Image (tube, rainbow, N blue to C red; front, side, top):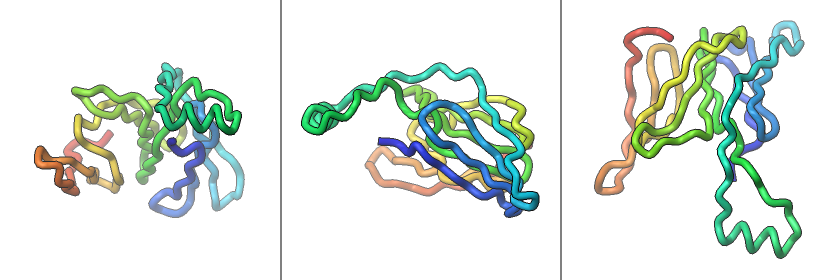
Amino acid sequence: MHPTSITVLSPDGNSLFAFFGREYLIEAVDLTAAVAVKRFRRIYPRIPHIESSWETDLRKKYGFPKIEYETDIRGLYPTNGHVWVETSTEDKAKGRLIDVFDKGGRFIDSFYIGAGRMLMAVREGFVFCQEKNDDETITIVKYRIDSPL
């Protein structure tokens, strides 16, 4: 199961970014003014949920509704100028799809983080990823961003 609620603080501590539910919608709160300032989204092709055997058993036993789609957003990573959104779209060769918005909620671009990588954090000028090596060991890698998004 993936989170249906994510709340993260911007690096400067002035904004809060949140995701609640299962569909692509991000809310931004200006903490200095204590008001919701933006709600933003993009048209996002939902990913069908493939039910595992334990989920089927649990659903039947307790009468839970069937999950039709994956949770659209897996993580939010604000920087001082942007918000990176980790989506549920994954390509075996390219990895996880990441969307980038400016802090005002304007969609900038998307990219794939790379197969075998898991996004952990984005800090000004750097991206931190967890990578699984061929021998199944895990490495934390710090990448420098050469050109700002």
